[in-house]
Length: 383
Image (cartoon, rainbow, N blue to C red; front, side, top):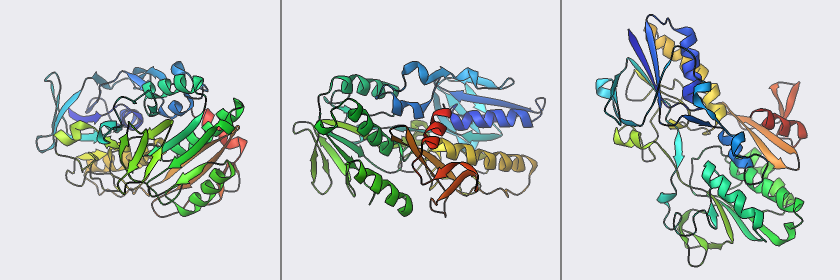
């Protein structure tokens, strides 16, 4: 029997397990998925926890709920990928052979990569909201916070969900306004980008929204360290921004097993053909979701759109046919902007976010580059 091995049981890996199990003969192909965590986290929901919109129980479910019958599931840490030998070794020593491998090991925050970040102020005055622990700790903090300077900083590109920091600062504006203390809170958005977003048209729209909400933006800021004594973030060119409360998107990196296995770039992301989603080095390895070094957003929508392409190309590879399906970098992002409204942007490798409607041109129901209640409800429904 031939074997397909999927590393990672997040959004990308789960989608592929379901697609492949329906398509491939069970008497000819075994499918195994490996993940070290039994709990599925609805990561977009972490954003809402600090503001008490969601609670812990709203964002967790057993991963087993989403795996189809006929797929072997192994909950264990992946120790090593030996691509030249078509095998993967797990932490307890078990060895898994494969004919085709799908790497969907995702990305993770690495606060340890920024000096001073994960020291005495971590989860006391400095918080992430990319982990459940960080989001819950931040919720507890801002409940009792009496105001001051809130800085939202992005440490480095790329990172999961490019609009999430913007959503956080918009929701913070709404939250503190509802509490009657917005005048006691200074909000500053700090980014290494030259503007609010990576695409000029979207940047203009989002910059105007920041200005309208009296949120200061500091672009081109590359954080070098956190000065815990002065309670400030410091850039490589020695600019310092003091804070009373720092929320930060730490450096994002791929899984450590990618580094151990010699399969990644400097940030542990796997070099991947941006159109076929095939490994640039191994013909029987495909890469999906945040684990790939694709020049597009690390977002759930990208995993969904690219999964269709990977599925077609993997079936072609199994049959010995050319890989003709081509991923165009399609991504879309719902942007919570506060006050029960939201916006939506849709783009790919070559096309800027443009006005219009999604998913049906001229029909919608969601307007692109517009701030509407309908788009907010679309984000809520995704849960």
